[in-house]
Image 1 (spheres, rainbow, N blue to C red):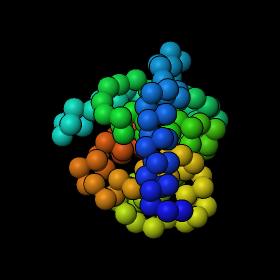
Image 2 (image 1 turned 90 degrees about the horizontal axis):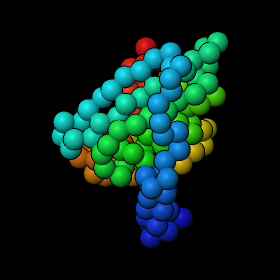
Image 3 (image 1 turned 30 degrees about the vertical axis):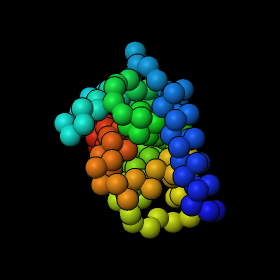
Length: 143
């Protein structure tokens, strides 16, 4: 895929998820909840997760921040809901590796769905924390 097409796809996906986020809200019956802040740019994520039989049955987020942090949280919900806790941890690690410029397996890249496009933030170190915030919150809840 050409660079201009990849940039267009990135912008389109990020703007779509930020403008119309999936999994936004709060779970009243959450089994775990946390709030994380990114003091560098002021992003905040409030994450609630429901785990049934070692599987993430639902996940919701609220918060405020830049387009990347909000889009990443939306994408994360698409990826993690329905996964076992173990699989979710592996995908969180794969995402973390991807956004710092490390190679991940084609299988992991496919499992990350839209979130795989955020690997391009590795070129912009100041934005890595924005993309990672929700994923760090999920990792904290699953430990």
